Length: 309
Image 1 (cartoon, rainbow, N blue to C red):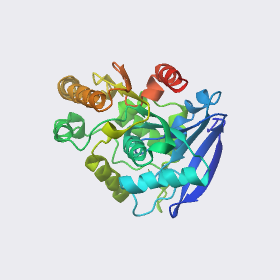
Image 2 (cartoon, one colour):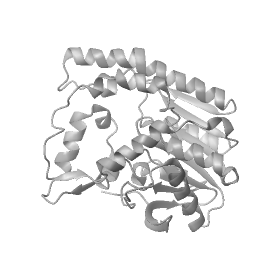
Image 3 (cartoon, rainbow, N blue to C red):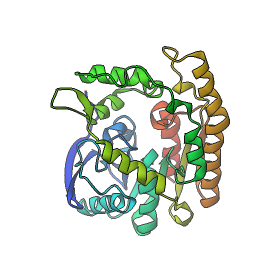
Image 4 (cartoon, rainbow, N blue to C red):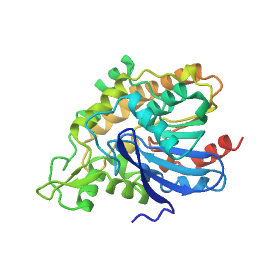
């Protein structure tokens, strides 16, 4: 059930209809952008915490949730133009952007193209270079891509069965499954003609997003706005299932996070610091990619301190 105190609305921009949430508040606009596969509702719990000092909103990008799912427009230029036209349509002159994961692309590219429109930027475990050879090397060594979770190819006819199967197959999701995640997940599914629960996002759109992520070269070095970068390191425990993984598989996952994933994350943190020596950096040891859910208090405190300066 959606209990977050927001207004749900739509705006027609750039030839499509985009969905957004508005929690109200006064002051500068703080606009949240979700990661790939998620929509504005993912911030239902965190966003209201900022309404005492900001006008808080969240935008659902094209191809997600209740926003339109056109066949094209999933490149960095179009995604950024969507945000610009959204701001223009709502008469928002300047904005604070806070984005998770894939929103790295939009935050950085928008800040480079429209310097005068950006007040501050917050990267929520988002500033990673997926165009680098080291990223491909990491993915090639990821044992999770070779382990077949149970139930992923089964058919489900109720949302609850579908979500239960997702949580069992992906322990990292189970670790952060709260009301906000449940609500946003409801907006990412639909029914097939046979009545099966399926992802609303098509495989083609998903691949288009992946292509954008893997081709986008970070532009942080040119950003002028104040920046807060929040990163999460992990020993892999969130990704291990005590239910269905073998001891060998668990060991492989732990070794991967210790010897491959963690060094890659630290490589990206170093690159981010070199590109933006003025940026504030928060590293959450044994964190979670959905840091704003799993470590909500720390993320909230860091954002509050950064944004009110």
